[in-house]
Amino acid sequence: MESKKNDDNSALVLFSGGQDSTTCLFWAKKRFKKVVALSFLYGQKHQKECEMARAIAQKAGVEFHLMKEPFIGELGTNSLTDTDIVMDQTKPEDSFPNTFVPGRNLFFLSIAAVFAREKGIRNLVTGVSQTDFSGYPDCRDSFIKSLNVTLNLAMDEQFLIHTPLMWINKAETWALADELGVFDLVRNETLTCYNGIPGDGCGHCPSCKLRQKGLEEFLATKNNK
Ligand code: ZN
Image (cartoon, rainbow, N blue to C red):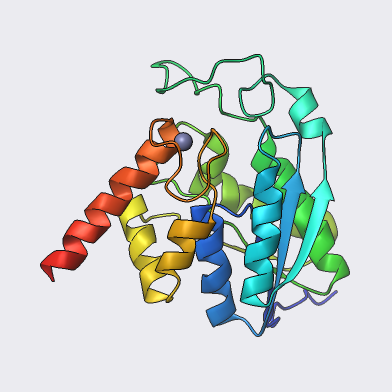
């Protein structure tokens, strides 16, 4: 049997409405003729992010879908879905921070691939990054490449998982948003904060600190140019 080719000019973006996936959404818009956004409701505390994601997709003129996978949050113990757990502020030396949702990207990308296949889409875009690695194994390039092979074997397709942020840091992600003309939108209308505060966020959770540090670095470089 001849193997199938990926000559598809459409892409499915795994879209949470945060800084990274919003930047990826506009990256994909520039690169592909048709872009579809897929968000997941997996039992996260801040379900508001799905509504923010929907609003951004609408603004971007992108078809938006929301899928419910509450079992992901129910399976493991983590501070993003369990309100009784106090969030780790730093990464413990010998393991992951408790913001790690085990298997999340494995489930998300697998579901996204099946969903994309139904729509005739073969390109998947995800905002994972190994650079600002917070200890999440499912953000690593080796995992993504391995899963890409597995998905292709599982469905006898030629999916291609795109990871535009894999090797860039947060400052460079801000620069990319700027280049794509969506710096203000990303800064003001996305939700990255673990405490559920949009835009610049609460300022003290690990996610806000990372975002803020990157923003300051980016602005300093930009002003020096
Ligand atoms: Zn925060």
